[in-house]
Every structure is written in C-alpha cells, then in structure tokens.
Length: 288
Figure 1 (cartoon, rainbow, N blue to C red):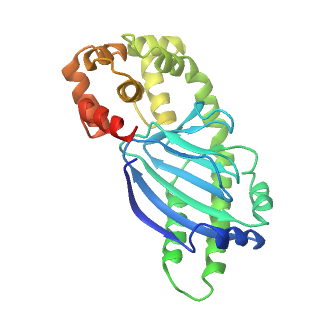
Figure 2 (figure 1 turned 90 degrees about the vertical axis):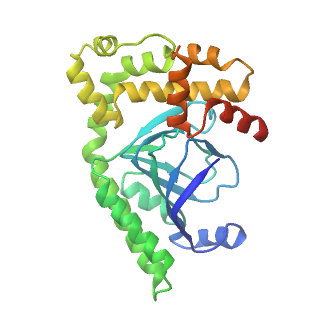
Figure 3 (figure 1 turned 180 degrees about the horizontal axis):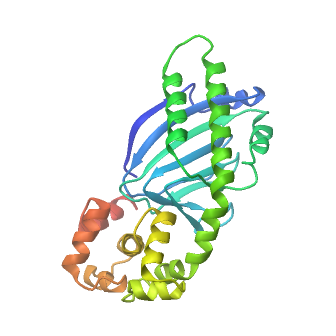
C-alpha cells in the first residue's frame, strides 16, 4: 500500500505502555492527516483503542460491520467514521484526491463521552461543514508535536471540543444525508452492479424518478462526485481486482467493466491508479 503521510505524531509507541493508558480517563495516542494513493488497508487484530476518522475530500469505502470485511459502505467527503476497540478496520476503493484526518485514543471515560455526544451507537456519521472539524484536528496535531506544559490536558480539551463539534454538525446533517441516500439508492445499485453496461445519465435519473438536472445536483451533494466519476471509480476498482487476481487479458477486462476501448481504459486507469494496468498487474503479482 502506497501511503503519503502529510503530518503525523504519536505520544508513545504501540504496545504494552500504550495499553496501560486505558487506566486513564482519556488519553490521545496519535493523530494525523493522510493523503493516500488508491490501495486498501486492513487491520483485524490487537486494536486496543478507538479510532476516529474524518473524510475531508475525496472518498473511500469502509467495512460496514465486524464480520464481513467485503461488505463496505461508501464514505464521501464529510463522513466521520468511528471504530471501537477490537473492531476490525478496513478501507478500500480510495480516490486519488482523498484526504483523511484520524486520531487514536483510549481511556475508561471514552464510552461515556461518546454516548453523551451521541456518537457511540453507529459507525458512520455525516457532517455538514468539515472546516471547523479539520481546524480542531490540526490543533490536536500541533499540540501533539509540542513539548508544552500540561500537554495532555490541552490534548484532552481539544479532543472534547472535536467530539462536540462533530456531534453538533452530525445532528443537523445526518437526516438530510440519509434521505438523499434513500432517494439515490436505485441509481447507486445500478452503478455498483451493472457497471459493465452502457449506463446513461437519463437512465440513472429515471431510476430515481428525477429530472437529470435534479439528479445531478443531489448526487454531487451526496457523494461529492459526479455520477460519471463515481461510475468510473467503480469500473476501475473492479478492473483492479481482475488484474490482481486473474490472468484475463487487459482488453477483455476493459470490456468486462464497461470500457470497451482499451486505449481509453488505459488512460482512465492510469489517471485513477497513477500506473498503467500492466504495471499494476506486475506489482500485484510481486506482492502476492
């Protein structure tokens, strides 16, 4: 997995010393802002802590539950994702413009704090405006880099501010996001299951009983992407799977994911994955 870490800091290494911090009311272990390429990540064991994520730009998929890592949920810009201790963590189908903020934390008071902010019962939350939340993440990160007096007290204060800001924004926007997703479900299903077909904007809009102009506006507000870009991402992600796990010819793969022109497929693939299909396949074979 190719990962570019723009900024990152931790209070102590992973391991027994960190696990003992569960005896504190609240302890922040690490924080960062990351820009990824397009590969997936899986962490399935020894997760002693909580992890909170904010998708501030781009999109990716997170595992929906703790039993089937192949069942994923689309997380566009404005999504907040919470993992609890011992929950497997997986994300995949990352777009090239993805920026993700994250923080790891632990403590016997964490569950009560999350419940008070109404952020405990779900994995996914949707926020309206990420700017204020990003600013608090950066305050946490800057403080973690410092050696200032009362550092942990300051970190905890910033973190409580972070939770309250997410909670306030989530209470406003979650219902709106859920309604939009419900309206767009027929189109999302078509793109995720019939991506090999020649899908038109008119067909997607009609499946949702909308004009194409209303559909375009609602889809962009929901996903942060145009329907065409979303569909292209789905096609390229499925092509990656076939390239990595089969010996099928690239021209056949291109047709099977709905991009019959191999030259056009190669250009789209390189734009999405930063490498050609041939290089991607070679790299995947080396890793396996």
